[in-house]
Image (cartoon, rainbow, N blue to C red; front, side, top):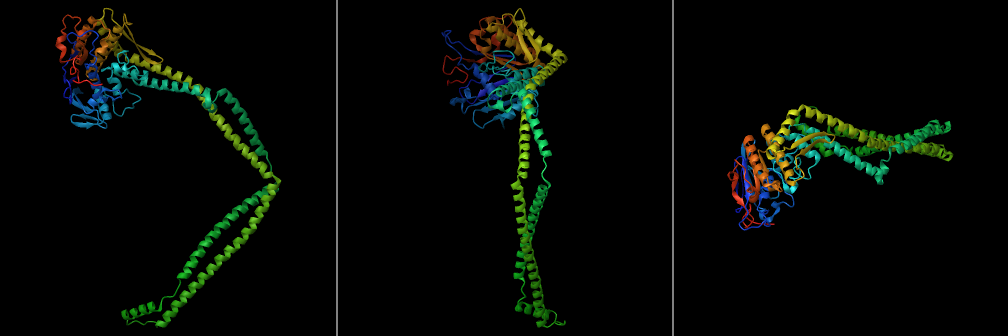
Length: 566
């Protein structure tokens, strides 16, 4: 349940709630006429604040966009999974929520609410389960979103798959079935768009008609086979084949000669560098080393200094002679290869001239090119044909998919018939308390998923339709209370009672109070004073459930915020 809602705005009328029925009244000021309104008293603003504090998005037309509320903080203390928590939020960019004094990103807060209120698992595939916000909106309906138009939809723009999935989950049925149905509907929508695009415009030239493409593919494939046979049967005179082979060998040999020359050029550079570095040691260096050795080893027999010097000079001469001979050998190899290259290049030019002048090679090449072009054309046609066939065959696949889903739904309804019966009876019993002729809730298994229908006498009346929503919401609260899921509170604003007879309003409030007490949930209602006190209900005193705070728009500070703003 919600314990209280308050704000940092000093003029805000802090609200304290209690278990069971809570009624927030907008008073009719003394002397006011029926033409005066209380729509600016702030009844609906309470709904918006609760959505604001439970992770709702701030749209451009949101009242929280008003400059007067730009720095205002709102707080709500309520029970969440057996624990009383305090949530705080301020309409500032990049500012999330504060839960029990700790900052919390909006996404994490919604995940926590989904888990603790409805048992949604964080890592569950979003395409297989409903979202927290989608289910929560059934318990705090918004008139601005069209939440009071149909019992089964909490918003006018709510998609079929979304409300089917949410309600199947809340009724403890298999919610994966409507999610799969939504996938079929999306594929069908895409199929319709693709067929439209394929029938006209540039896209039509990409895919096309399957029958036409089948013919084009058959003709093109036959043409390709004929050209392949021509290529296989094409015979070049042996002289040309020998010349082609010789030309290929020459080309390979020229490449080898080029590579070998590259290696020898590298060797020449290395040998030239080595020759430059081959010099005998300086006399001073050798003399110094010899004298040092004489001091260190005075008792050893040493060669004479001149002999050692001659020895070093001899080694250097031999090394330079060897490097020079290697250098000359490399240059000779390069020269020999260059001569061979000239001869080979001349021969290759002669061969290619003969082949070109006779045209045998050109004819064969053209045949091969045409085969390649036709292969590409046939492959393109084959892909287009397969796409067209898939496009035209998808409708049958989707029909089969719908039938399978219908079988799954019927099986689920059979297996969970007790839960279905529980929901149907809860709705019927609440309706029976409101009207002599009780209304009925029907859940059909159709080829478009579960369909919710509501039958009640006088259902065309606006007031009767709204009471269908009342019965539906009371049914949800009963089932959720038994399963120990849901927010633990149900909130209806005065829009629910638009067009409803005064006797039905007071009776609905009594039923809401009794049901809340029986199943242990909180029922909060905002309404106009004259609507609430038109009639009396035996054994039920509305005054016991009215909150101390009363709203009015007869004065500037009479509304919920205590100020007026656009």
